[in-house]
Amino acid sequence: MNDEVDKLDYIRAFIVGGCICVIGQILIDLTKITPARIMVIFVVAGVVLGMLGIYPVLVNWAGAGATVPIIGFGNVLAKGVIEDVEKKGLMGAFSGGVRAGAVGISAAVFFGYIMAIVSKPKTKSKS
Amino acid sequence: MEEKRTKQEYKQWSQETAPRTKKARNLILAFLVGGVICSIGQIILNLLIVAGMTKDDASSVTTLCMIFLGAFLTGINVYDNIGKAGGAGAAIPVTGFANSIVSPAMEYKKEGYVMGVGAKMFLIAGPVLVYGIVTSIIAGIIYYLLT
Image (tube, chains in turn purple, red):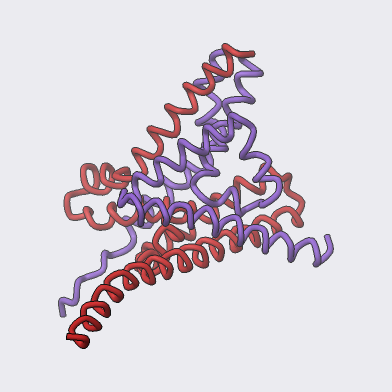
């Protein structure tokens, strides 16, 4: 791998990742929907764009710029569903999403739980 | 009379532009914070691919690392500050998903380990998983019927 290619990778990831976040910020500022709803909307959008074959093109081009935003998690679910439906038929619709998203879901539950147990919430300026 | 008008004009002008500049600032910060987080993901991804992983595996492990990072930074009370500055730029990357799990779980720890930590960690992550998984199953059924 040469350095030139690497540098372009980072620029593309930065721009695409930044733009996806800007879309979210615009939605928050204009419609005043909560960040939680934005995350739900983005995951659903990721599934739909993944099924339509649009998002994988963006992933190919932007790498982590497309996979790190939560919309990329939706795309992973869609990718798993497509793979499993092609392998196992209708049952694949139920197995594919969670199978493909397993690492993300498990990591979130595991690290989330451990960190919540280990760390102390910020004490609000009580001495 | 004239002075009064300019005062009014100024008031109107400042009312119009103040939220606008604040919004512009929010957008720039969201872009920068989101961009930086994704670039960190790209660094991890590239390192893993150079280390000999397939693209799919490297992508999974990158997600794992980013979730760990988000959870860790929330645990040491850093990510909430990133969130205050970055807005959607901090919420939409998968690190923000991890933050949405750890943050309420920490806060509700006093309500116990089952209904406090165990239940509240899914306050935001729960809906995200529910809608993501349900949509993917419906989409899978449609895909099955169409092929």
